[in-house]
Length: 168
Image 1 (cartoon, rainbow, N blue to C red):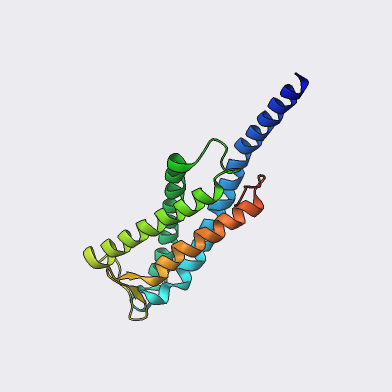
Image 2: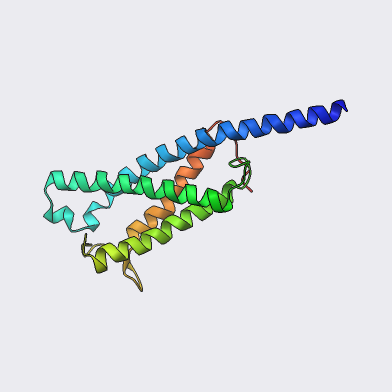
């Protein structure tokens, strides 16, 4: 009887730790997403025509505005992924599944968004230096951004948060 009580107590403590841990992990993830995307947005500006045609204020606004969008995309991708494939004990379990799925969602959104905004709406345009991925002509830099920045953010979050995910 005492063993069952201790076992149940251990499960309750693990569940409580997981509940506390997801918020810490989410905070670290979003902080890393914000910092990584801000750096990336400024670094890739020469690959867009605004680098040559925009004023300094327009260029800074574009990078900060796009970073805000990146944070929203990353947050929505993570929340949507948690709803679909996350478990009640996330981030202790299924951490890798959630990370990979959220990154894939961000990449999918980026492919669509780049195509719509460059080819259909003309909201922004690439300079001749932007490598493109056929067949839609999406820019290679934004695709690399959505593979690299969230991957690094998930890694940083797993190292910095209060909970240690099982990464198998």
